[in-house]
Image 1 (cartoon, one colour):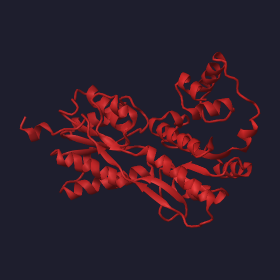
Image 2 (cartoon, rainbow, N blue to C red; image 1 turned 90 degrees about the vertical axis):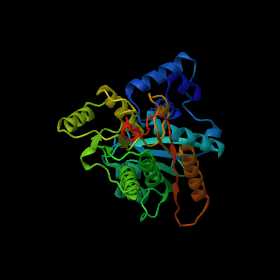
Image 3 (cartoon, one colour; image 1 turned 180 degrees about the horizontal axis):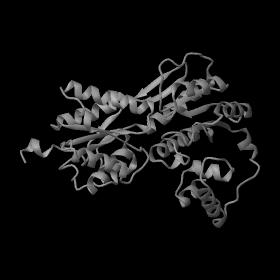
Length: 348
């Protein structure tokens, strides 16, 4: 599977879905994987070996095509990295990993059906795009131990492993304030999730502690899953400038996708990054180092989160302790070349 994934330029998760005829990938991707497997002499075993049949397994469950989690979520940089680290931790712990994605429609029935199959010893639920009621419904209908990854609701009796989103956004805001920015804008996702709401809270707190606030007129909203420039953002910025207002000297973006898209959109409008406008993102995906200039961002310890999720789930499988654990993983600022001191502060 690793060989096929490398040749096809996809994750092992995608290969697993294709070879097992499972939903969650597009038809074109599935056909390419199967063709590469055939061309290179790989034969998928229709019946698992005795060792595979007795091997313990965990399920990675995602609600695809919902908000920020796309149908091919395993190709999105943030989730791709998480999945890779989960796979590695499972293998080292003697577990295989089963991938399952379900649609929002009739999800309760599908969760019950999944539980009745008894395919694995525990479930890691990707909680990024789920609200409190959805997570509670999954927990109520899953009989095996459950850990929710990349979200946290304090009042639910469920295991969670989450990002310290408030800290990360506070670090981003503090960084811009330390660089002498005073007119600061905000580029939000037009798809709202718990993580983004927490980031807004942390960023506002950082500016407030520095005697500032986000320029209320300079709050824009764009799609959170597009890496190219966006006409929607270009239109919003153009209308803002045509009204006679001055463009902020810095923007905080709720994720790296938005930040990279903003850099490209601002460049098309004739602005230099960071000389004219500083841009900072959140997540530290691999693409943050490829964009020009390299993106200043908030690093999310994805490997640490993945390992904690697997370890917490294995502990829950082995223990009868009803007490649940909520783990929040801290972030750190990664300063690259998309942020700097504004020209007005340099006297230029």
